[in-house]
Image (cartoon, rainbow, N blue to C red; front, top):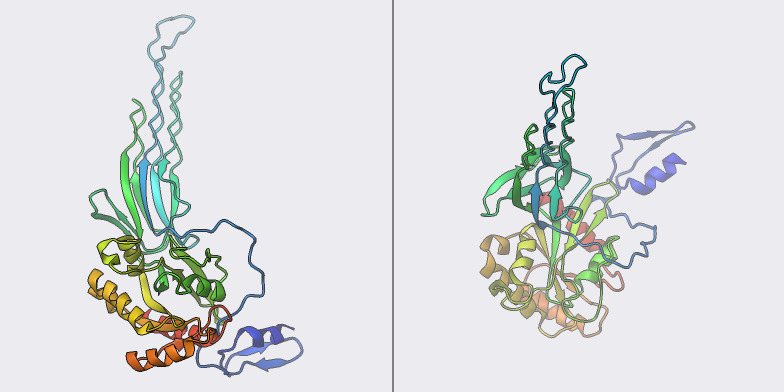
Length: 357
């Protein structure tokens, strides 16, 4: 049974890697040069509220207050004025950012984070207990900036800690540090969808991942990034981001403007989604590239995959031929609605991931 399942999940395999079984020995066979994407048979959840991907967050961090010392005087049966015996307060807890592979964005991070206070002192020289530190999990690749925009922390490895605010020292009970930060993700996704409103980006993300972005027949349905995961049969996962639509003069902060383009900067590869059902789809491509160049030359020169969506519509076939002739680059025809040619797109996405990871 184990050997039979292995043939289903391991498609890119070597003849030198045997799978042992109690009854027989089965050799894995090389069938594909590129690992194939796995299509999950598990149904999606019925959750109606979408889960947003937060790649930038402004937070206020306050260290825990130090515990107050106790004013107390010792009274003995033989000496009512035996002297002070009050204990010092405990130290307040720090607030610490720690990188973890268990989180991928900042949607769980509160806008205001306060450390735990130290315990107050008591009589008979009993000192207060120090407070536990507050650990906030952040994704690997988090960049921490101060209010002036300067980078004060670059958390690029797993389990790296950054002390965001120190707690107050005990005894006199001072307040902890109160500091504001801007948390940013250096890389949001491996591949980001770029396209005009209603090009079918959300439908495509819904077709190839388990994400559930909002889909509707009007412009700017997507107002915040959605991220889904594509898993291949060698267990490699690609993070795919559906970004808000790009319109003319977005580099001048029209529409969703600069904020959208900042999302695109955090993607390693750009996937340009063109609506092949509209006349002159090459004009869509030129407008998109114009906005990218105006915002950042580095962003415009990033690796790109070009797809022509909505090929299930009759008018799209002629438009696709014109697009192919004018661009003179490879354009992948797909239909996110009917799943047409998505396997080819997933294969190309994996190739680009291996080249530019």
